[in-house]
Amino acid sequence: MRAAVIQINSNADVSSNLERAEALVRAAAGDGAELVVMPEKWALLGSGEVIAAGAEPLDGPILSAARGWARELGVHLCAGSVPEDPGNGSKPYNTSVLIDPQGGIAATYRKLHMFDVEVGGTEYRESEHEQAGADIATAPSGEFQLGLTVCYDLRFPELFRILALRGATAFTVPSAFTAVTGRDHWEVLLRARAIENASFVLAAGQVGRAEPHYESWGHSMLVGPWGQVLAEVSEGEGHACAALDLSELERVRASLPSLANRRGDAYEWPVEAPV
Image 1 (cartoon, rainbow, N blue to C red):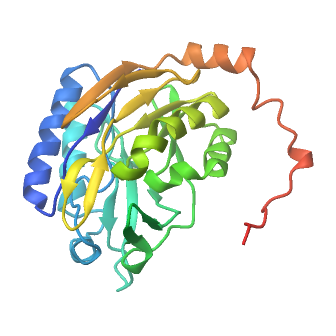
Image 2 (tube, rainbow, N blue to C red; image 1 turned 120 degrees about the vertical axis):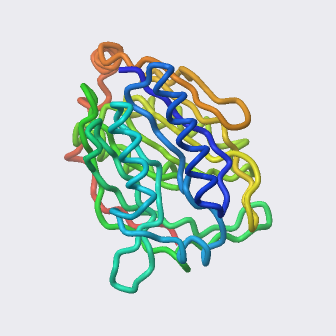
């Protein structure tokens, strides 16, 4: 399967974001991509209040547009993440949606880990305006089984391991990774998740500045099961494509069978977090 990751500099203007995202998806499909992964919050990136106000149900205009692109282009489309209105007056979810080539919704994943941190002198309190999901998700995409994640999830290796044990052979990681942490952690973490699970990692990121205080790292990339970077968007908006060879994954898992060699009987779950 040929896959692509999209890199975009989104803002609070949904119409503009949709126009640029469509052009990028079409360019990736024109480059032969059968699976296209978009970044986190690609249709709307702004303050927590702006994102909450712009949340839509899954049958709203944003995902309807993305479903139309997938259907017209005949691609599997991971529509990054979008603010999902649950319809009950509560906070929106940060939801990743996998769309099949017929335009149907193949899987939804609501981000588990809220980005409540302080980095580079800036506080991020995602949980003030969004709510966490409760379930993990895998879904087929061609000959691959995708494990869905979103951005901050990358720092929780247990999620990726569970997805791998449930059959995932590739992980989607739509992100808006901060430039402060991205410089030191982004590529290291992506390659680690690929190596430790002998899986492909497809990481699509936001890039550049956005109100009120976002500075996203970009460097969207596809990583192979041996940990090698297969393709990367080094700067600006654009896409990167690479062929995902399932036989390569099978060779890596056969020669370094760390998943098969696990000692699940010796591990206790859950483990208490340190204070």
